Amino acid sequence: MSEKIQAPRGTFDVLGDDALARDRLESLARGILERAGYERIETPMFEATQLFARGVGESTDVVQKEMYTFDSGDGSESLTLRPEGTAPVCRAYMEHGMHKLPQPVKLWYLSSYFRRERPQKGRYRQFWQLGVEAIGSDDPAVDAETILLLSEILDALGARGLRLRLASLGTADSRAAYRAELTAHLRANEERLSQEVRDRIDLNPLRAFDADHPGTREVMASAPLLLDFLSDDDHEHFEAVKALLDAAGVAYEIDPTLVRGLDYYTRTVFEYTSDALGAQSGIGGGGRYDGLMEQLGGAPAPGMGWAAGVERMLLASPAPPVAAPPVDLYVAYAKPEHRQAAFRLAADARRAGHAARLELGGRSLKGQLKQADKTGARYVAILGDEGTSLKDMQSGEQKTVEPDTVMHHIRGGL
Ligand code: AMP
Image (cartoon, rainbow, N blue to C red; front, top):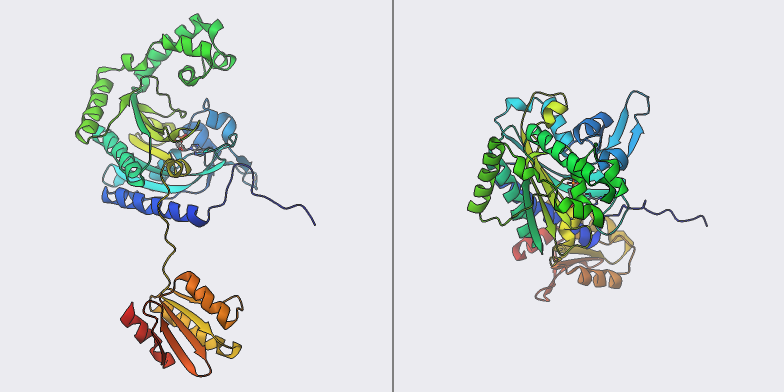
């Protein structure tokens, strides 16, 4: 026998209770997002590599080492399996002329994303994200509303041990002044930093806040903070976001060291973590990206959004009781010659909107009745030489009926 082929490392199949839990998450999220006026969008699984190189940023881990990139096949362009959803949604906004719609355009998505990361619990190479993007308004109410929506979805799921951290990165101008100060601080303490941080002082100094390295952490404890460099406008915007979250009763902590892994953020950034998760504690996060559309070659349009990991949301939430879908009618038959009539009865029942099951495994009548019991069917129809008998599994009552009247009889009881 040849060797069994397995799913690639860092990927998984969705089935059984996990599939039911995901359906539940989707319908909870859909309800909350649609009530707030968000519409579904789904973009292709792969995009031009340039979209992510320019959108997410050349200096990020995602672009530097985590993308699955391949040739289009005809040599015309380089393609990449999408590692995130914001840049593709911005591309779609431009491509469909959504700036002509009433602003902001509010969109949500739920689909899979791909990153070449070291697989571990809660971290996969193909994972699902639920995300929202609100494009076309820089009103702080957009920031607060999107954060509130994620908070409500996590509450509805029953996610445990939640913490919301919030900060503002300011606009590109205030960040440039800050970057110079931070770089000077890192240079002055260079010998105490990890090699990785040292190598990236010029490329991406903010990521030094993310380091676990003890020496680096000491240096960062006395580093200048971006929140102290905000312009008056940025400060006012951030205060308004906080006031709205307070008004909605959303609890948060200000974390001036919050750094997100993607380059496009401006002003508000936030992250939800859960103590119920292990090392990979990030459940979801996002922020404002007012410069992204221009970076992608479009007309300027401010935006705000987040993405939350579906696997991590489910890991942090208690498993809901999962009920198997009910079966209204189980159609059993005594002999092969009754099979066609049974097939037709099951089809008719389904067309009439009932959940119907039919024997497909060649079981004996006794075996079929056992199956009917297992599925918890409300009615069982048995087709035999003496006609059709119908059993009400709730009352135990059984009677012989005309084959054409089965539907009429069960409709009365259901
Ligand atoms: P990001 O786009 O990096 O801000 O990620 C948003 C959320 O997606 C994170 O908070 C995680 O919940 C989830 N996520 C990101 N990368 C992975 C991964 N490799 N495996 C599973 N979930 C992930």
